[in-house]
Length: 128
Image (cartoon, rainbow, N blue to C red; front, top):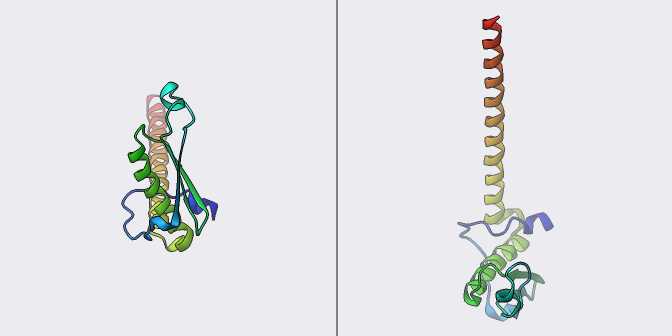
């Protein structure tokens, strides 16, 4: 079920399972990565754990603790929904639909490239 959890963080997912604050364990830690002093001196990275499922989310997208808390809860809600509902989850269905669109776009681009190639070959033959 690891690939399922990677589908999380997609927008417009409406029908998600609700989380209660009693099920969550929250910590504030120092973030890692680039940022220098701003990152090394502040505890604005949020680590959120859903106790029943054991899913852990770490969020350090902004410098604001409140924004990170909100984002972490959104990500965790989507991951928990994927964990319990699996392929029936809206998040999973959305991910599948976007992958299908991406494949279709690639296929069309490949076809266009082939057409251009054939057109150039025909022009070369006409010149000779």
